[in-house]
Amino acid sequence: MNALKVHNFTKRYDTTDVVHAINFEIPEGAFFGFLGPNGAGKTTTIKCITGISQPTSGTIEVFGVDVVKDYRKARAMVGLSPQEFNVDIFAKPRQIVGWSAGYFGMRKSEIGDRVDELFALLDLKQHEEKKFMQLSGGLKRRVILARAMVHDPKLLILDEPTAGVDVELRREIWQYLKKINEQGKSILFTSHYLEEVEALCKRVAIINEGHIVSIENMDVHTRDGGKLEDKYLAITQKKKV
Image 1 (tube, rainbow, N blue to C red):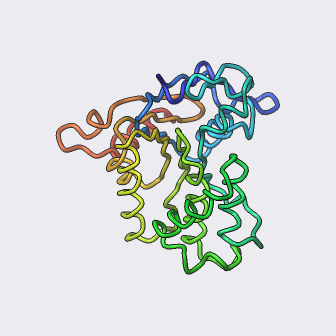
Image 2: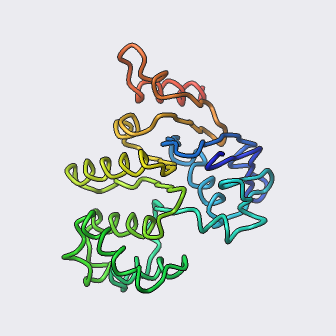
């Protein structure tokens, strides 16, 4: 089964198509990179996958569930770490993550242990009672990541999850993501740090100006000692010509 299937998906704002009839699939258990320049359509696509916005046309399915026709069921299977810090800035990290767990129907008896587990992993324990607004950019990013993972979603969508995170923690997050992927977690991953995409993802789709311009396995991009960054720049710059 596919963790995600995007079929002829178009998103239009007023009279402008920002995503143009794109198609791609993510098999269950895949670690899938979704790349593109700013404004290419990545975040728009993610917003429609998660129900923040709706497709103008086409369909999106999460584990066979239509994200428009059965929003609640589809959304419960997705964990989203968005690029933006969309939280109550006066709330504390433990509240933010706990509220999300409750939203997804976790029992009160489960929430405390799960939050403790994630805060230990992400080194947030000593910051859990501070207001979100008082945290550094890297700490804020960790809270958003914990919120995405708290309900153990089948599909994890990570939009720039290590932006502003120090090198040591970034490596720790890589190891954790590799581990849960090996255990069967399906992951959609976007990042401007192409070296981490190269290290983590097995397959990559590149979107540019609202069109999917490449879908390849990582070994195609890195063949003969090549770098994903070189292929990415060649593909996106060619599209702009």
